[in-house]
Image (cartoon, rainbow over all chains, first blue to last red; front, side):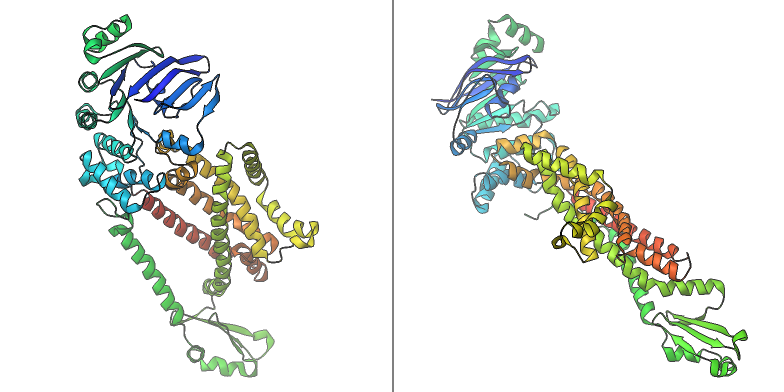
Length: 252
Length: 318
């Protein structure tokens, strides 16, 4: 069953076409990496899925249920509020710049959304938050403010924070791009473990090693459209599209 | 959830404790000095008996709460003279020469000046608090995408920032009763409080709006993908982070307000400026302006100190 499916998503910023007919399907348990040159619309696509950007036209399905349909910059269909919120929360997101809440400790960052958005009890939220922090290897940092954590630790807290909402799919928007090279490994390690545990993941990344080893499928985007889509072995060994070949040559 | 990171809290540092100790000690010394003023009997004893005898039936003495003593001496009007003593901090001073007379005058005026300062400080604190409360709603309204709310808040801020505070004060105190007797505000302090709150609300609204809009967009995005509502995002994420950025401009606004509070002397509310002016005209002396201005400076310094502390307190997580 496809957890997320999009049909012909288009997105224009004024006269600039950022996304052109992007049709993507992510199955339950799949790890999909989106690669491509900067300005290809990878992040915009991810942000459109989780409603941080308004798409110009296209359809988004979550759990095979039509979630949103827009045409000519107007909403044609949108789920009712409760249902909309429920499906939106099936997606968790990790940002390039972490976006932790600086005035809350690591533990408070992870507990906040379960308490206020899911309305679960403080005690339950505390135990969930402690578990999630332990999973990302930061059990001993729970009382630290983000400013006292390294970039890698901050990003791991951000992953724990997203996981605490128990999403069905995790969206990663260049999670390691803002990190010092020596800190990239710890974040990728957490993501690998997450992938092995069966979490469905959609990852925008420049880490080709991670894309090659951890993903089930790779989507190559260029100029706002999907240029090529296949298994990691295929795409790294014999890329079909000349744009893919050019991109892979330039970074490998 | 009150756990804090390791390390000292700013309000527990040695420097802060030392400063606090000095302030408390100074207050204690002043209190002791004021308490141990000499009694009337003691001061009478310090007068020379020769002088009293010399004065004969023209002798009189006055003793005020402000510990000043007067004697009129001399056998006839031509040779009449005053001999003034002042008791302060347990000692008795002869204050017949010009300089000491001035000091005595200042001490004599102090209680009245302090009464005026009390009104000034109360008005400033009350109006700033009410203004901040009002301004949170105005700022959220000004950010709001709802056109009507947005326009209303914009117009409010434009009006109260764009017209003189003195005219707003006059309008509320003198103007409203003429529109309808129901609107009459007979209490001068209340009228001043309303005018100042409405005015500072407009100023603080712009400060708060700027502080909220200075929070990184990522904070709104993270809140949104975690399913927080707009109200929750504001209450839990944005406003707590804005507070530290708010403190310096709000402190500035507070100090401006403290000095603007002198405008209430125009509706004859006895604030520090009004008291100073009436002392100056009744004693026909401009000397009183010096202690009055020193009192303003002391109040400003005190609140600057408090705001600096507050800012450090809210910088904990940085």
